[in-house]
Length: 406
Ligand code: GLU
Image (cartoon, rainbow, N blue to C red; front, side):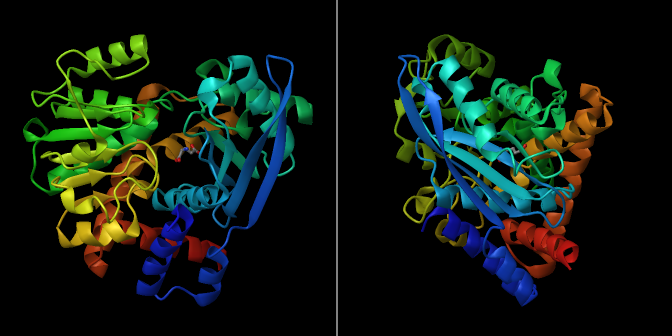
């Protein structure tokens, strides 16, 4: 099954439990709009190259469409559809007044120069200028897009409409209308939720070992936060390799090493293991923070962790979900675990519209409150319906979306 089929299966499972209104379910079985364009970019060698780009707007019953843009060579329409549905669910889980959308470009950004990436980012905005906007659809960063790209996008949009429009995208640099705390928000949100989860399970950070897959914005900041809180991080994976050290990594040193070497491979005192061995490690917490479809029916039986925290979108397939549940593993779903990013995006958007800015402490405090409330509601919903946390999160979201749609 592809990511979109997985997302629809998650939706249907929750909808059946609460007997969701058939008309609403039918509406949520497909996106509101799919937009596609061929972006033309003048490459540094003077040649013109085309890149396929998407924007999928899934549902806006609770507010303007919201969601990131991914630059990745494996981007495809079904993936963008899945990610946009998850955005709609995610925004409803943390109860922010936004809907769900997602964008993508089929490109390997690692082989593009900064100038080419800038051209591509600006071309994306020109292609979708009529369907985005601060009260219509607000993009943000996702895999391999960053604050600089958001600054180019906001600038391009502002030029097109003839006025500075900061609220058109979020995740911007601080001096370009960005919010304090946005860069670390995805990991922080996940950290707050995990803190609640281990309290609930009577566990203590200093007794817990962790393995993190993905060392981008979400994964590396999460490693830092967990390290500071006393967890022992024994395995780390980036897109090229997996490093393991049973004694635990000094994350400050790993971050420095990754910055210097652009890779984790070769970090002092570490042993290289395969990704299969990574998921089979005897560890307490596994945090997938990379791409979708990582824990599947094929490798789920190897998992020995007590807790999975999904910082990536869609890392666990529905087939694996069932087995995790049977094994009693607590899987904290993406639509809750990684919702901190879009939550602070919402704060950023609101600050831009009101032209009033919050301090980092204020942002973090508000984020913490949102995440803890969402965790409590999802946990209680899971108890009420006797379901797993993902189904509970979907139920929470669907009830809110249905109310707004009606
Ligand atoms: N790309 C992030 C996500 O998947 C953030 C989206 C946003 O801030 O709008 O949640």
